Image (cartoon, rainbow, N blue to C red; front, side):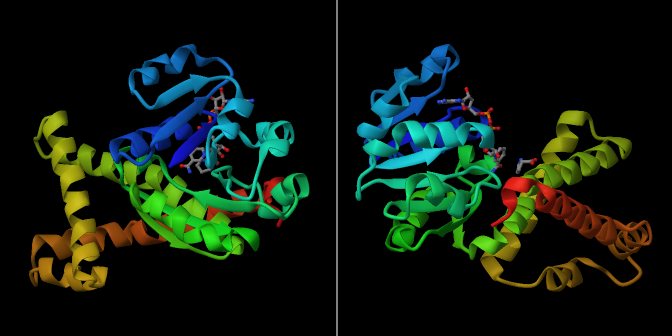
Length: 266
Ligand SMILES: NC(=O)C1=CN([C@@H]2O[C@H](COP(=O)(O)OP(=O)(O)OC[C@H]3O[C@@H](n4cnc5c(N)ncnc54)[C@H](O)[C@@H]3O)[C@@H](O)[C@H]2O)C=CC1
Ligand SMILES: O=C(O)[C@@H]1CCC=N1
């Protein structure tokens, strides 16, 4: 696959790392206005660093857009004459609807809208995707690309904002939970490094249990909670303090915020 990543910033570079780690591209173009910061990527034999988006589009089949929302329109305008039937345009831009992209490009091109998260750099992103009418036949290709770097799910575009909160912002939410657990572990006597190791591997193991068994979280909780034991004591105290409620309220607040962003109107 010949892949161009237009906008090699935080997310664009995370995607580049994920693709490189999974040997997912025959050639890759990474574009950025000032390329000095990403020169190191040219050490990979198949990667070209450039500030020329037109060259990247011309020489690639899969165009991954990872610029800030305000930069997208100009980029689409300045490259649209190069697009062909073979191109698959994959946007990662938060809040930029397919209708808005079609208003610039027209509806004759394969357009995929995606919401990966930053764990894509380590091959563990939960990525939600949807497409325009024309792009429907490319959804499986897009899923195959993202499945190399984690897990993907096709969703209706109307759920994209909710997916942004749960999957993209979700990385930050889980980080805070891991940090809080780490702080608790330090209070119980572990040093900071040990505490983080215990917290993150326990978190990863808990998620793996659900992924591999397919069981419900409460079923796994029942396996851990000894009657009159320490787990139920801790869990109930967390709930008295509003653990589940604060998480749900935070998720809803995040969703309300993203829903207020003007560009999100479909
Ligand atoms: N799914 C997720 O977890 C996240 C998604 N996002 C979304 O990803 C997009 C990118 O966010 P970040 O990577 O944080 O932004 P960023 O600002 O780090 O990266 C954007 C990059 O685009 C480059 N750029 C600007 N104009 C350009 C042009 N004309 N041609 C080529 N490159 C150009 C900039 O130099 C910069 O390196 C945003 O639209 C944001 O909404 C952002 C953070 C997390
Ligand atoms: O915080 C934000 O608004 C963006 C969208 C998802 C991740 N970062």
